[in-house]
Image (cartoon, rainbow, N blue to C red; front, side):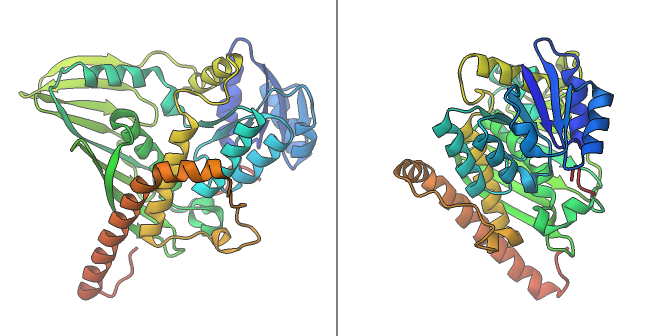
Length: 381
């Protein structure tokens, strides 16, 4: 399979190193707006062709799959461009900047029969199956709750500070925590409550998110771009608990009994970089004629984007391009999309209403006590 990279930034380096080790993969092409940069990347990582234009690369008939490694503020435009040129796509996380963008490009892919997937690498790792097996084994009894955290000191990273680039902790880091909860507990949500603090630029700096599921289980998530976190998850049961090291790239699983003694332990298998699992999943799906991966289907991608939209609404965060009619994504009005919307409507309303109400109450309380405000460099072009 001839794989091309659109945007030779930092994250593209890790993908390029991964592709070099995979069978059945050809490091075929790389495109940048800067020809010299594309050529330097191609020379260093063994790509056959370097393009100084995205369009030029997409016009290459021998490109089978495009991996989009640009900042997520550009994902929507880049995905559309690839699909319009008949290319299958694997795009970095987060999928897009909002659900409207995601819905539009997913519909484009479905109508054109082109493959489209999100490179949320933790979703594709074999440790996901191990965690699910341990959770369902009754080893720690009935599961009642989980907690997880993700955090890095990134407040000076320019692209994360800027609202016009869809900055903030939620989209860049919070997606990991939300996907982890989804992988373990599913998506049958009853409500969400959340609170955040912001940078002076208006983007979210850190947040706590409480998910309540219809079966009574709960997930407590913490996300920050202000500090380093251990990225650990805990899953709680009636007979013990499970500790998971690093929810971004699973390292180990330990199960404890009520005496807090280790009763089972599982280590992560050897990996090249961890990205190989998503690439292999994409190749398997494409060989089977599918347009999505079962590990992260389109419906789940859209559900996660809708959750992040509603969290941002509760936080009072709107990106500038969402206010500009000329730059906002085209609205989809077809009956098929209306039907999909109706299927999700009740869950989305509950999420939005609960988050908004609780946030408004918190802001009123805070206003009475204090008048204080709640308080990166781009990877590619």
